[in-house]
Image (cartoon, one colour):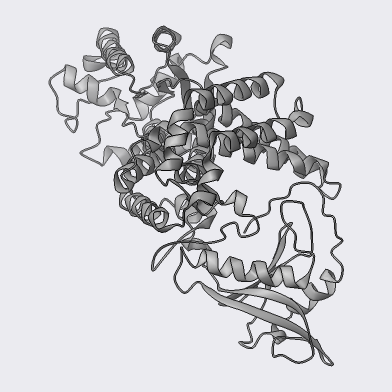
Length: 533
């Protein structure tokens, strides 16, 4: 559910507390739920009553929306049902009236009608796309289905001369300028002056350079009555893929380029550290919709969406009811969105990520999971080393540390091969993850210099784990005949004695992760930081 707020309400929320108390009681509902969960946003109150949800609109006026009279609230309740029914089946059930009679509030029609509510089926949280992402349930097949579904939704969305006007270069210019003007008070608070100036200049430059393309999209029917708030929380995977909670209160926020509507979802995926998923959806959508030009506009619209998110979060700093701790969190969140906004408008650069750490600390596991998010399969030193010695990945050579295929000369050739692979890929504009111990500063510095030479972003993913955890892992790994690593406890102890810690000059690109730390949370932050660079 949305919790967006801009400005201050013109009308006080009179009588809302009494209404909330009444609707919080299970006895008011005809299906007699065991309990009622209440979720309050800035523009609505949601009552989750078992299998059904009742949503009322607060009597507020923020300028861009006006819910100050019962007639207006009933109108926008009906609009919410009609508009969202375009994207969902049997999720929105209608609008119900709330009455106050002699015995108090009721839904049975006794007494005076005092309020209206949208009636919905309750969507299980685990079926929201955001939850599925957190639980690693989002597959390539699901992403393709989502892309096709969005293309289908957009193809059926209403268009026409009035709607198309919202995609004109002059309207987009005014939208941009409004964003930049409204964020001036937050320069130095949530957005750096340099970032504000850079994103303003780059966005306006893009608009000027692509005026003909934007005009052509108006003429070709790509400006439509879309969802307007298409992010991960609003995608439901139940009997098929459905969307809900579109913007009903202001047509201006819903009318726009289908590329701009899609861009919100893609930006949300990027922000949460899944750029490979965003790229897959974009390319599949372009194919399914027959709109390859969309790919030329996505970075611009993703920047716009990220900037708006940063702006909206910034507004919460001026709300007196928000606690100081929440404001600190808001500052961090808004700053990240602004950094993402400017990153979209800069020339794209590949990245080189190297792992660092001792055997058994989780480097390879983290590298694989990172690769899933970035769309890059890690290059493993274990496999490269064995290939150089004519061995298959699953063929084991239990040489002591510094002996056999683990001599200093063999190790040198392995790292040279790794870096040469990285050089080839980066030269072609492709990103690389090198999965190796990188226990010496010299090898790490060679990787850093390679990235610098080829204008690639660079990060070091350093992994650590307690000795007892490593010992258990290595024992378990030794029983897997197909695992490419030969490292055992003795090799781990030998590595520990010679591993060179991060030097001061590496700290800006060094990111450490302990095995006790949540990996998905770490990788989300790691990828976001990488995108910002």
